[in-house]
Image (cartoon, rainbow, N blue to C red; front, side, top):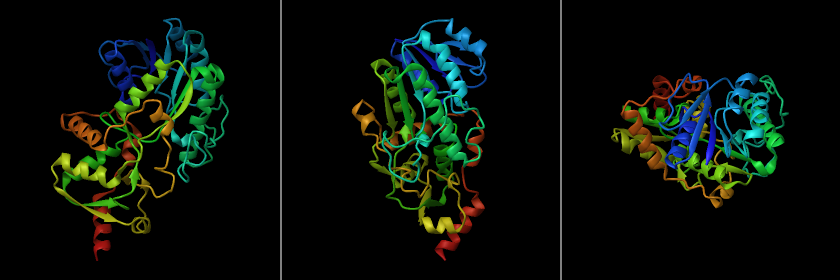
Length: 338
């Protein structure tokens, strides 16, 4: 297999490139080369995916069995469309990493791959949908990018992957690293909502492996890349306590109390959200196609080992959004216990 990874130097992109090299595949990556590192054995082509000239140079540099696009979170559909058009003559298929945010019903309702998507044209610019909420804007951008790939490569040559939350070593958003650092600090830890609330994060290594398997399969398709929902928020936070030394004590505070105190869902207490569909995404199709999800405890342990050994994520502005201030956490706990 000869693959081109759009990105390839950090988090999911690096995991894809690293695993592909281990499989003995020929691996090229395309990025600006400004952040992260490539795994040994991958060949880098540097350039800006918003530049038609750089994309033309990339297309002239080889042919590939598959393109795996992990780098388009910050790119408008029109840029994805330009890249897809440049690469269509030299690539057999295109694996595009999208998101469950592309669904019109997320996070309010349960979802399957046939659920309606947000609407955006394939040539939408960065401003398309900006008058909506940030989450809807992001979802529209991804839905338009999906359309750009499908319109260019056709359904039979397009694979669309829609992960929910991806965790693991190298995570740049900072959700799991924040919980690990918080539990390591010890004391009474404000645990959000219910311990038995099901969660569906997928490990970065498992997501990467599935992307490579889909690239090699030579068929198109759309897949929700989520864990099966066998584990809970309690499992996740207990695993955090265990790997960091067990110095803290979880205090579960009901949703309504957190809402009353103005706690921002999804960010101040990462992964906590009360909407019915957040962790109700059907991943049956992906599991039937070979997605295997390791226990959440293994993801937690691997992330802690990475952090504890000095691992640092690529700097990203979203990381600053996550985590509740110690004073606010203490005030909520004190009010609840009194």
